[in-house]
Length: 86
Image 1: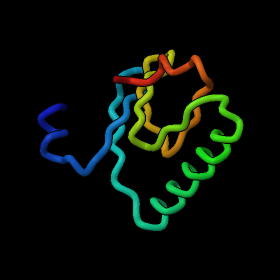
Image 2 (image 1 turned 120 degrees about the vertical axis):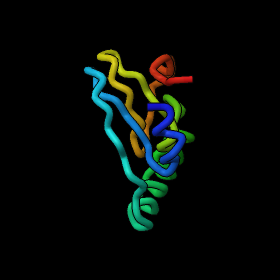
Image 3 (image 1 turned 180 degrees about the vertical axis):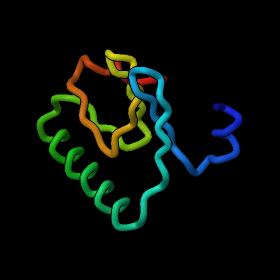
Image 4 (image 1 turned 60 degrees about the horizontal axis):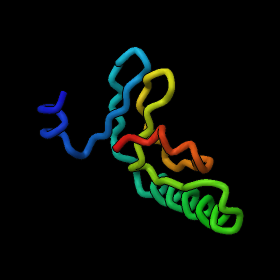
């Protein structure tokens, strides 16, 4: 898989809990714009409330069932950052 990733660097990958590989192609301009706005709005809300941390689509999470996901935008309650991959 690593060799494939190096050759196709414009693609993103996620994995299900059973290890099934999910290939995620790049989005178009309008989708990217909506995702950016969503992340901005989430961050603006969080700066007022400061109840957690906001991440963009580059933030990878390992879920309790073993799945690895990178949502378009995400908010994580303070103290729950352990799900983030380093």
